[in-house]
Image (tube, rainbow, N blue to C red; front, side, top):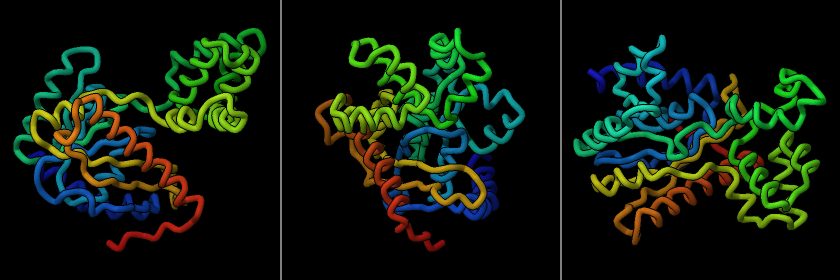
Length: 282
């Protein structure tokens, strides 16, 4: 039932999604048409799996937090064969289910960062302590850009704790983290590698571990842009599949995966800036 439900949703939903968001797809031919694969990429938005789904006719079983299954869309997640992940309970059950799909030669999708790369309420409250004597919490949240990356805030946290930036710099930088990181790089206060690395959260080992256990290939992807009607920058791109057996350790394979995703994200941004993306012929 899950495969049928997924394909019904894909056949009717994909054309609408592509047209509504003006989706640009790069190198979808890197997605194998058969055999077990793990689709792994960055995570910025709740809809990030849909550009990937729109790029292949294969059924893919996406790992999603348990809360989605308990909400109004729960029946949809179940019908399409998504995998429920209990982040605060037994996450092993989800891994076993994903491995079962891979052993059947299916595709599984997941986000190795483990969560969306955005600021959670708890982190916002922590950062607000710097401003609590100046403005209200509601005003502070309005000042904080909605697209602020948690990974870039984490870098600023690190620099502040290591006393590489002052308290006043830290206070001003968190309100424009992206620009601040690039500014620090231009001033050579951080390295280009540190700057580039800050676009992603650390990767968990679930993907490379499951690939090792099932001989599945990993297809890296990068999603960038905005989910707005007639978007001028929503882009998904893919890299050649990775074989974890070609690496000396899971740590090495995980690093290679992260580097691939990081390169794809940078590539997408450069392509959009150069305005040379051509629509995929469907």
